[in-house]
Length: 343
Image (cartoon, rainbow, N blue to C red; front, side):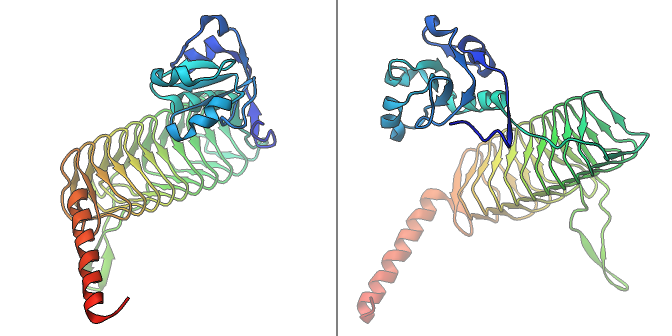
C-alpha cells in the first residue's frame, strides 16, 4: 500500500545504503545495503519494498509482525526488528521516515501557464509558478521554489530556494529564507493590530516593519503572521507553526519551536529557542517565554515563563502547582456537594 498516485508523484527507488545516507541513518547489516526501497508505509501496511519507522513501545507487537523491507529505529530497539526487515539505526526514527517520504512521495503540482509575474521580478531558473499566481514588482524568488495557484507574492518580497507557497496564500513585506513552507490561505506580512484615539475617533496606527522567516520555517494553513509596527516580526530557523495560529506584530520566536493550532501570540512577545505550545495557548503582550519552556494546551499566559519550565491552566502557572490546585478544587467541590446532599 502506497500513497495515492493521483496525488503524489513517485520518486526513484533507492538502495538501503543511499537511503540511510539521505536520512542520516546507518544500515545495521551491511549485507542488506543493496536492497531496493521505493516507498514508505506504516508498520502494519508495509511490504518488502517499503520502509517504515518504530519509535513507540506501544507498537512493539506491530513491529514484530511487520513485512517492511526496512525500518528506522533507534539503537536500543534494533534487536526487536524482525528477521527479514533491515534496521536503519538513527536517534530520530520518525525524522528518518520523513526524509524518506520527502524523496519517494512528492505532492503533485499544478501544470500550465497564466501566472502573472511583474517584469521587474527576479525569478531564478527552476522556480515553478502555477496558474493564477501573482508575483509583484521587485520580488525575488529562489531556485526550486513552488508558488501554488492563487498565491500572491507582494512587491519587494524575497523568497529563498526550495520553498513552497500554498494556494491562496498572501505574502507581503517579508524576507523569507530557504526551504520555508507556507501552506494554503496563510497571510504573511499584513498590518499588525494597533489603534489610538484621535480627534475623529479610533484610528489605525502605521505598521512599518517587516516579517522575517528564517530557513526551514513552516507556516500552517490559514495562519497569520503580522508585520512589525517598527521593528520586525521574526520567526527563527526550523520553527514549525500549525494551522490557524495568530502571530502578532513585533513577536520574536526562536529556533526549533513548535506552536499547535489556534495558538495566539500577542504583540511584542519574545519566545526562546525550543519552546513548545499546545493547542489554543494564549500569550498576553510583551511577555518573555524562556528557552525550552512548555505550555500545556489552552494555557492562558499572563506573565513571563522561565526557561525550561512547564506551565498550564488559566492564568498559567507551573504545571505541578496547577494540577495541585485543580485537584484541591475538585475535592472541595465534592465535599461541599456531600454536605449539601447533592451528587
